Length: 175
Image (tube, rainbow, N blue to C red; front, side, top):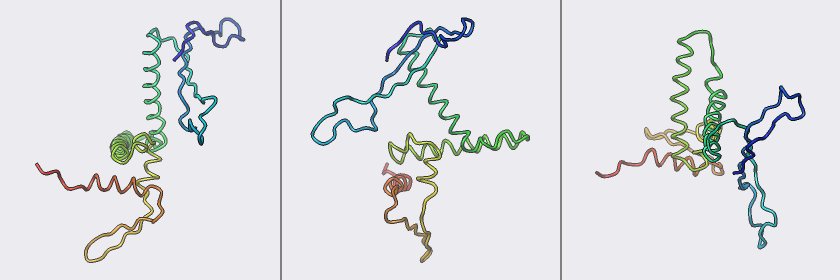
C-alpha cells in the first residue's frame, strides 16, 4: 500500500474544478497468472493496482481497509440489483416489502449454500450460485416410492453439488 498525500486531480482544468486529496494505491499479485511456468520462475511478476482517491483523514492502512469494506458493500448492492431488487420500486408498498423480504431470505440462503459448498462458491455472486448449484441439469426418476436424482456424468459442478448435498443431508452427530 502506498500513498501520495497531496494529489491534485483534474490538474488540467481551471482552479475551481481541481480537487486535492490523498491518492492511495494497493498493489496485489495477479493470482490468475501462474508464478512458475515449467522449470523456470517468472522474470517479471504481474501485479494488479487498486487506486482510490479520498479525503478520509484516517491513517493510510485504516483508510485502505475501510475502502475495501465499502467495496464489499457496493458489490452486495450491485448483486442485489441484478436479482430480486430489480423489481423495485413497483408503486405498491406491500409489493416492495414482499420483494425486499424475499430478496433478504434468498440472499442469505444462497450465501450459506455457497459457504457450505466450496471456497470458490463462498465468494461467488448470487448469479453464479444460481447457475452452478440451483439450476441443476438433472433428471428426476421415481421407483418404489423413492426419488432419484440423476446428475450428468461430466457435469463440471457435480463434486461441489454432491459435497453440499452430503453436508446438508448428513445424519446428526451422536450426542
